[in-house]
Amino acid sequence: MEITSPSLECFNIFLRLSDFVTPIGGNIMDTGPNGPPNKFTYIMYTLLALNLVMTCNAIHYTHNDFVGLAFSLVTFGFTVQGFVKLYVIIGCRVKIRNLISTAQNFIVGYEANSRLRDIFDRYNKFCNFCRPLVLYLYAISGVSVISVTIAIGVWTKTKILPFGFMMPFIDHTSDGGYALNFMYMLIVTVYAVYGLFASDFGFLCFMAMACSQVETIGQLCKDLTDYLELHGSEDLEEIQKLIILIATAQRSHTNYMKNLEDSFGIHSFIIIASSMIAVAITIFVFIQHFWLNGIMIATILMWQIFAICTVGGIYMIKVDQVMMEINETKWYLLPWRNQKIFINIIHNAQHPVEPSAMGRLPLNFETFVNCIKMMYQFLMLLLNMSN
Image (cartoon, rainbow, N blue to C red):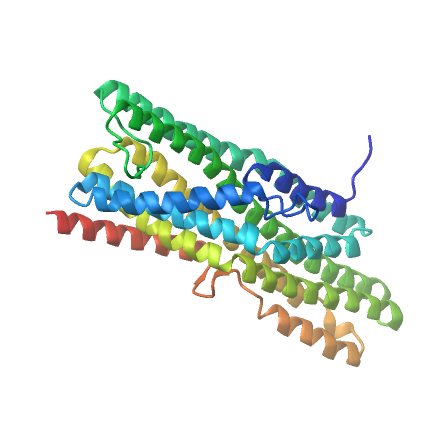
């Protein structure tokens, strides 16, 4: 059985993701004639533009219908998220390719070390493990929304649509208009599953690579301490090599995190902000009118906030752990000149590039808790206004 190097497997993870989302024109790893923007990309842009027009039409159409208006507003939030996700996938494709290249090159520089290779292998396996889970989550959610809509429609003998928009100039209450709207929403659901999976799993993988880089720095510091304990500070050349490895890894990781923030900062901000508002509205309507579809919609939105904040929180835990490992490094055994270099390494480790939503919200567990608090406050405001 052929053993794939960690660097090649890292590249293959993103290549498989790129190939999978070809139907929505998100195959950013393809730089040939079939690369984006292509016909599939323009189809996706057209669907989003149509969704925006139809959602605005639905907001106007349902302004006197409380449940319908709430449904339309939640759908409007999903449409905004769709534009942002497509912008990240397509508009930032060069930056994302550079991120992938940076992640792969980082692994290439250190995978010869067996201990570091184990770190990279572990995170590659984690990404491959999460891939079907994230895909199934969105696929099952999409199927559930459609199935529940059909079930409720059959049970109540009414024409219910799965999303809060409808085609203009077409009577969606007639048999033909309802069928046409429903078929269009089935297509939108398929594209939504692709888009949600592509952006969210991609961000998860990038953050996993960031964690592997942080652990690499920690392991290199342990290697330096082990060497100093065994051999002392006599071999200056070998010590210099170890310090250069640590400093180079730290600099590469800092640049990687800056590029990651530049590419996904707006994605995280819009997802968190729109999801909080939509979740509060969804729960409010569910309380008032027992909106079954709202359960699945709220689950998807909450998952997005939870996933983004959790991966950021886990990353910061890794950073704190590595910071302690750096502090525990017996740098005082180094020659005087190398001590000054290592103090700079400690200083840089104390000021990491923290993942955030456009610098406004740090992505960590505290932000997730604050999001829940704000959603609760907004929900209470809606309930008080309705009384």
